[in-house]
Amino acid sequence: MSATVVLVATKGPLKGRVYRFDEHDTFIFGRAADCHARLPEDDRTASRHHFLLEVNPPHVRLRDLGSLNGTYVNELKCGGRETGETPQEAAAARVSQCDLSGGDVIRVGESQFLVDVQVPLACFSCGTVLPPREQPGASEHDITCVSCGTVQVVSHARRCVHCGRICDEESPNENPDTFLCESCRRECAEDPLRVLSEIAPQDLFPRVESVSRERDDPGSDLALPAAEGFRNSVIDGYEVLRRLGGSAHGAVYEARRTSDGRPVAIKVVLCRSTVSAPARAHFLRELDPLRALQHPRCVELFDVGAIGSTGFYFVSDFFPSGSLAILEANHGGRVPLEIAHPLLLAAAEGLAFIHERQIVHGDVKASNIMLTGDGSVRIADCGLVRSFDRAGFSGMVATGENIVAWPFVAREQITDYSHYLPATDVWCLAACFYAILSGHPPRHIEPKRDPIETILREPAIALRKAWPDAPRGLAEVLDRALSDSLRHRFPTATEFRTALLEAETGVQPRG
Ligand SMILES: [Zn+2]
Ligand SMILES: [Zn+2]
Image (cartoon, rainbow, N blue to C red; front, side):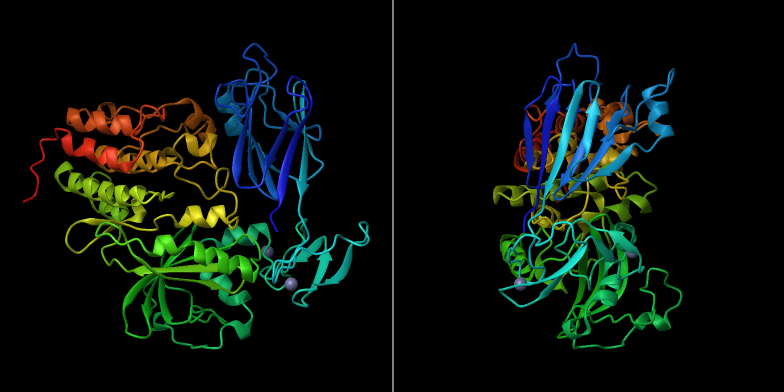
C-alpha cells in the first residue's frame, strides 16, 4: 500500500536527475552545500536555500524559503520577494507554502521539476493490492476486494465524517466511514480521542459506559467536554478522566486502569488515513523493543493498541507532578542550576540507556521529561513518534503548522529528515536544558523570517552569551552538544553524559 513520490528534473543544470521518495523525508533545492538538489555556487537563478519539499507519500508540500526570485508551481508564483524587499520582509508578507499533486511542475529560474505521485490501489480493510481502475476517467465505481470481500468505492471525492464537507481526495485507499478532511484532522489533533470516539463504528467498542467524572467537575477546563455521543471507554480496559495536553504528535490523557484502579497516562495519536488491519498488527509488533525498555530513568510503555482503523494508544505510568515543562513554568522560565543539573544527568542517563539499545528517542522535549516522586526524572515516549512516522501514519511534520517549537529543532531534522540519529536526541536534550538554565531558547528565531531558513543558517547561541554566569565546563559541554556539525557533536547520549559528569559545574553532587 506504500505510495511513492518521484521528482524528475526536466530542465536546467540538473536535467535527467530523478529523486524518489517512498518514506517521509525532506528535500531542499538551492546553492548551499547542504541542499539535496544543488545548483553550482555561481548560478544566481536560485537562492542558497531556495525551496523545501516535505514528502510524506503520497503527500508533498512545497515551501519557498524566502527566495529572491520565488518558486513557481505550474507557473504560479509561490514566495519570492518584491523589489526592495528583504528576505525577512518577504517571509513576513506571504505564507509561501502549497500542497502539490502528481503532474505539478516546479520551476526555479531555468530549473524545472515534474512531480509524479504513484499510489497503488489497495483494500483499506486488509491492505491487499487491488486491480487498477477499470475506467480511468470514471469519477466513481466499486471494486470488491478478492481477499476479504470489502467493497471499495473508488472515488475522487470523499465526504468528511466530521464536518460533512466533500473534498477532493486523490488517495483512494481510504475507508469512507472514517475519512477526515485536512482541516478537521488538524483541528482534531488537539483532542484525537474525542473525534475517534465519534467516528469509530459502534461495533468496535461493545463496552460502552457513560461514566464521566468531569460532568460533576465543571471547574476543570482541561476535562473532556461531556458532549453528546462521547464515550470514554473507547480504549478497552481504561477509564479516561481528562486531557492533559496535546501536540502535533497527539494528545495525552489521564486515565485509570479498570482492572486495578492504577493511574495511567494514555497517549492517543490520530493516523492521517485509514490503516489496514495487517498494517496495524505489524506496527504494534514493531513496538515490542520499546515495550521491553526497562530502566529507572525511562518511562515504561506497558500497553499499546489500535482505536478503530485510524488511531493508536500508548499506555504508561501517570506522573502527578508533570514534566520538566511544569517545573520550568513553576520557576518562571529559569530553573536554578543546583536543581536542573541532577535532572540533566538523569535524563542523559535514560537517553544513554536507549541509545545503547540502538533506539533513538525522536521527540526529546521538556514535556517528555517526567518528574518522579523521588525528585528525579524519567524520559517518556522513547521511540514512539519515530515508529509512528516510519510506519507512514503521521502527517506533515517539518512544515506542519502545529510546530511552534522552532528554536528546539536541530538542523538535520530539516536537512536529513529520514536519517534520525542519536546525536539529534543529544541536540534536543541539550536545547531543552539550555533553555531552562538560561531562560532563552538556544536558537533565536526572528519573528519576521522563515524559521526553517533561520535553522538552516544560524547556529545555536553560545550558552555564556545567554547566561554569562554559566559554569565554563558545563557551557563547553552544552555548546558542543548544540553544534550543528555532527562531527563535532557527541554521537550519542553516552558520550554526552560522560562529558557532563566530567565537567566542572560547582554543583555539589547529592549524597
Ligand atoms: Zn481486503
Ligand atoms: Zn472535515
